[in-house]
Length: 277
Image 1 (cartoon, rainbow, N blue to C red):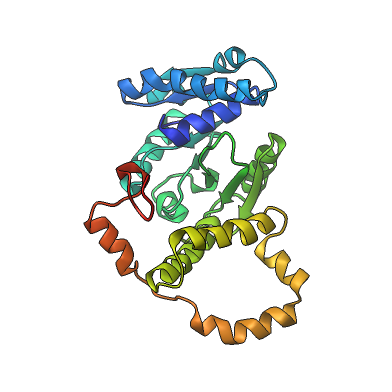
Image 2: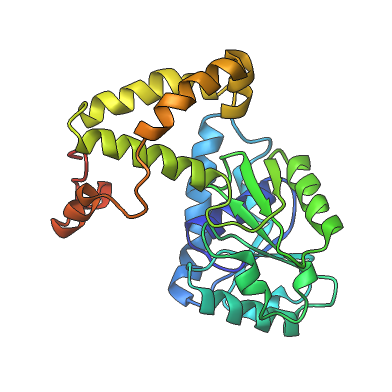
């Protein structure tokens, strides 16, 4: 795992919990020094909740931390979890191609950068794909496995099987599209919710309450397409015929979002966003 930020730590922890030896690499010495301590804190929380299959001390022993990229040389799979900048990711994988053997699989944990945009610069795009974990990566089940145009089909299918073997809910995305699946649906919902708030339809608290205690509860058990079958596709189509034209469809962030940014009201990190924290 290259990158010891929140996502990288979570990915390393996940595989260590599944009894795999993990080499965690971060070129920043200060970040690397803190890595094991931060993972240990997370493992201790899980241990207190009786959510670990073995002692936290045994799990952390499987993680070796270093600041040298060459330590990835013997890895079967390299998961990249560095900042979301195309040039950084491309440069990293070009270096890894020189360091690792010809069978090493390379996976980028990106939530927005095109898989193809990274792959086109590589010498071996057939062994490169996307694995979009969700924070906290050691706990949230979903992983979106994303094929690039040149990704080997068998490789992508095997990655899904591997992740599912270790308890994830991995899905295969056949085409490299912006936002993949989860972020597209999440942003569509957020755009509508913010539009309702902007229009004075209800308070932020009440809009969130509607989603949490209707859609949220239901979607633990049924996805949006499955729910159409339950409701009746004919009924859904009747509602869609008049409702779609009333839904928010702007292609730029709302003025309410931009106003929040201008005021420095960025959410939890500044103690105020849509809510006061």
